[in-house]
Image 1 (cartoon, rainbow, N blue to C red):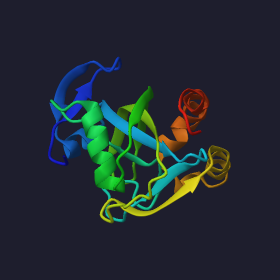
Image 2 (cartoon, rainbow, N blue to C red):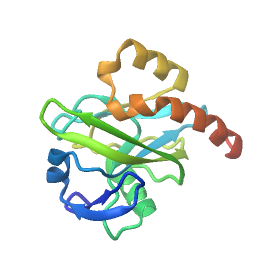
Image 3 (cartoon, rainbow, N blue to C red):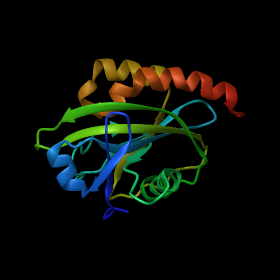
Length: 180
């Protein structure tokens, strides 16, 4: 999965081409991404702490997993594969919404993404890939919001940016899915 072509998009999320991961991030080109949020049956969100050595945002806390859909592979397939690769979890996921953001990093890389957000429910214990994830924990959305306000520097930018939409979408999600 790491060697595939990222999908470049226009501001309306219409594909306009492809590009290699590093040059896309060096040039700040708008591309598709996805973020997965897995909740347990108590309504707590599974967070991961990004591993040391990630190309950006190492050691920061973020959503359950995230990556980029690849050219010529259905996004849902890539979401499932990446959830297994990063967290060792199999879980049905459901598309909830998408948002666009841009963030410049100290190392000169730029995340400029149309991020497709997926939710899922699982009480399965994660088996994270140590090359991707250094730690994990469950946390309620209320606790997470408070901690992001107190210590924003320990969280990824895309998690902080998406929190209002995550909270709003979760309320609808838990009503429409059994077990929460």
